[in-house]
Length: 162
Image (tube, rainbow, N blue to C red; front, side):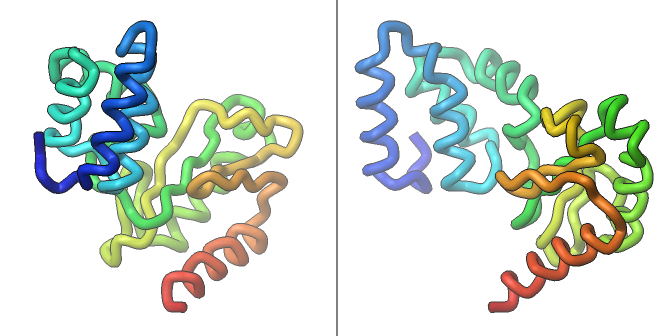
């Protein structure tokens, strides 16, 4: 296994997998744990997950590429998931994405040159009653306006320099 993962992390994951009735039921949990440590799922992370779970790397990769919140490419320090569901679109979701793209200088699927932000569209974040919405890291923000988006980005930038 790849040495970049701390032994305590690998031991914890081995224990969880061993305690499961079927190792595959923990596949997403294992992938999230490896991603949390490395920031994204490299080919090495997929190989480590496959070994832990008794799966092939191809099976793990198929799973990892299915989920919007598992990243097979490097992402920024803050990942912004912009909801592009019909409800958000009807409430101005397209303008949210356009505003973010202008402010960050990147398009959907891209990361800012400083590595601070990645902008990803997602089909729904389940915040339809407060559309338009976005998810930044693990925090949902709704009823977005240009001013509110600028405040959120400003707070994240301030936190990056603190």
